[in-house]
Image 1 (spheres, rainbow, N blue to C red):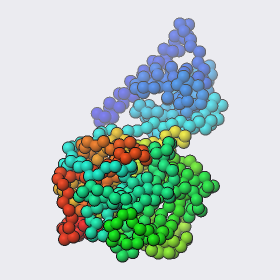
Image 2 (cartoon, one colour; image 1 turned 90 degrees about the horizontal axis):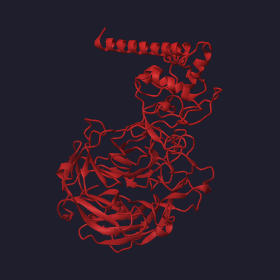
Image 3 (cartoon, rainbow, N blue to C red; image 1 turned 90 degrees about the vertical axis):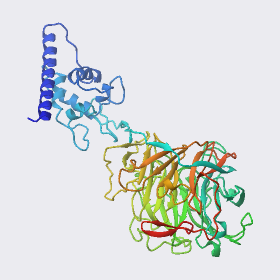
Length: 601
């Protein structure tokens, strides 16, 4: 025998000897009349008393969970292992049977039918629970062996037990402006003369034109009258609705077109709905095209001569709306939409398997449309012929990528690579590299971990394969981290600026809980192994990481996480005052052996 086999053989021999002694001792003392303990085959505590002695090598802290998960005092219902033990005991000769004999009879079977298959004894020796499958609904049984349908919550796992490394940030946070309410995006104008400005999206329905050199802000557009009343739980309180996205058309200087993503009251028939009764929608996500009278004017506010609704989508609940709007170099518009809200992609309007994994609806996906086209079903926008699911049954033609929970922000790198910053449920936050036609896992997975919606309990990640694993390949995140590090990813960019050379070419991304991370895009380690947390001191909850025309970065948010007040601030990541970008300042850089200009986005 090898040393390992010999050691295992000795352990099993000693274990069997100890078991025989336990059985013989119990029989002898009862025969001698020293004591005879009555045994009830329907009593969990009676089985547990014997179990503790028989399997004394097990170090499980709460041994009661071996047989029954409903009450810690014992009772019905039983889990699969407890049911098998009891049935094995009852099948023995009632004049000579012992609980220990039943234990041995069921050691070789796999009561909980887990995958990969492990016997009850293997799980006991591994200090695991043979009566249930991790991450699954586990059926309970009553004393008549009838399934009760009782749900047993699976145990949570710690996705990443080791904390991320932390290093001092190679920059300072320089306050640029304040007095906002809930600033959640910064947008660059395609007009060259406005390259020293950012257009700030304030959740309450205002777009500000911010001069990055002076810090002065001017109201560019106000659409507050379009929005639902904000404050999901109290007026002016926390909310995920509002003005969520804004984009200039790439040819804005000539056509004056800009686009909004707003949360509006239910007031018209939606183009898309997952609800049996659409009028029960919490609100509607609306994509609108506006035409500015004079695109080159610096007068505020902007004069709007025309508006046109592109699409209207019923949202089942107030949360998980996504929100971002981004144009690619070909003039196609990408629309980020969350799974419709609630939690775990469950509840009214989510169907039996959730919205994100169901590509017949737009929720939990990134759509791609041509706003200047007219071949959509409602005739208000175009569907690019290059979209991946055109003509596929049960797929929405507008979908570019799906399986996303709440893609809060999107970002294009200079080579056209598109990233989504997808907010997690209870465990994992992730950065995804979006590719045409791909499924990113939600709600089958959260990050790279399998996910259990967990019925009426809180959903959680698990190592167990789900029953509904699709044939479609699920794409892993580029980066992921757990809730030991943050609670909600809020945006990011591949850094291509000049002020922070050590960050060049790396993914910089933020978390709502005042966290900032740097990820190495070189694929030489696990997605998490390439992340470093940066030590920053900030008093704001971070809503987004914005990028200016020179590819310098800005965090934005407020101190209250509310949709009222004026505590919103914007900080630049830098070490010196910002240098104004002149029209001639356009230096080349190389990305993947191709030359790009930092300011020519």
